[in-house]
Length: 400
Image (cartoon, rainbow, N blue to C red):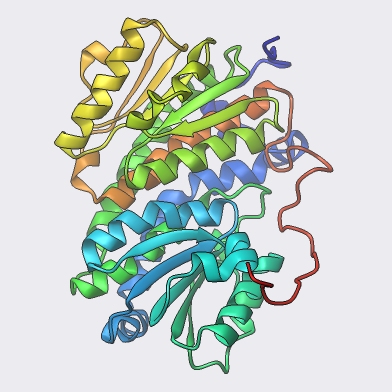
């Protein structure tokens, strides 16, 4: 049976206006602050990427172009890599892929391309057991790989353990991005923005202007659509579907994870590409679940996406549609649907579009969590922890 909201959810405006003590009591103070700080922190991260020392370090890593570029992390961090990989391959001309740290730990020889390569380790805390475990194993077994660590935690293992290792470089983000909440929000989008530094040094440009534009667009999400997303999150649903293409498929993956985490598993979440939905997963829409659609800014890609949304309408599948983009056609929005119309979104690059898409997913999950009577700062009490608890790292592969 559908999960019914346990409480009446306040608007975004009333959440922000509540006294700090009340925000703490209701368990949303950290999450709300970290979601809302994203525009400001994006500007800070862009400034860090424009710094001469950061640019010099990134330029050095690309001076001898690697044969392969691998982005790794766990959970949300590998979804950062999934957002980045298409953009890095297109912009750098280097085969790029995201591989989960767990897969590298257990099946390195079957997943890691041969060197010379660049392994980009992405992490909020840098203290998850597999984070340093992967770097340790690749340093030992793959001497032709160089390493870039992008992290929000200056005290984490990834930031500190390799200070004297010449093959490892660290890109350190602001401490503000090291989210205190259980779920990753501002850490995710800032790690994503930081990963574009490789693109910008290769093109001899800085992302400051684009980051400012995307920050303004994200602010407009809060100002113009925060309360509407509160209403959407309070609706009666126990499943949700997220759609994205290219870099924004990683955003769809992250948005689905946010809904699953922040609902404490009460809402099942699926993500798919638009073209992939027809090949079986469309059966997911046999229920009135929200369909959250992240639209591409590329006309040829968007044509496929709009065709799929119109097909869903014709077949009367799913429930409310939340469509996010710039210049959303009126015919894909029906009664009861929500168009998150964001002028200028198509002017930023694909990665920064994905950052804005993720913000919408974060807000929807936040409000669904509150509607279920849970605490966003620590949902799923006793099941999840902010940093995965320590587990044994076993020896090298045995024929894997």
